[in-house]
Amino acid sequence: MSAEPETTPPSRFLPSRRLRALPMIIFGSRWLQLPLYLGLIVAQCVYIALFVKELWHLSWHALDFSEQQIMMSVLALIDVVMISNLLVMVIVGGYETFVSRLDLQGHPDEPEWLGHVNASVLKIKLAMAIIGISSIALLRTFIEAGNLGSGRAGYTEQGVMWQVIIHITFIVSAIGIAYVDRLSDRETRHHAE
Image (cartoon, rainbow, N blue to C red; front, side):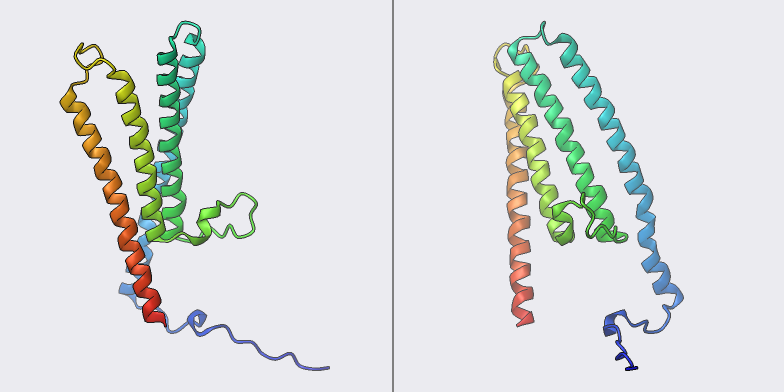
């Protein structure tokens, strides 16, 4: 009977010495974020209720609505879905990155992006989601504001201009985040070589 060779885990998994009290408290403090993520799940439920309300309103009045009103209702539904997607990214990605692993490897419903999520990836995904939400809001404003001079829609030229400036700021910020992240990755790879 041959003895199997003893395998030792990599050194990073070996328990060094027990954490002292202060580092243990600091490391454990990440669990204080758990109620925040649970609160976002409650917010997700609120968005589900809002979606159902908007969908019911659209379905009930579809024959009475003009094409523009139907388009506005559909954009409102898309807006709710995009905000809900943003919530999922923050809940799942934030928990995985900052609190604890979800251990979903091999699960058929594991999100594709979760396998390589880190703080940088999460920032870029959130920035892109915010741009998408802002785009929908801006499109709704353009459609509703059709007649700026009439004042019917309650939009002023200056108000629309500020929405465009804010949207452009989101885009520039996302480009800046992606650029800094790319520089950081390049620097990390350079030091690894």
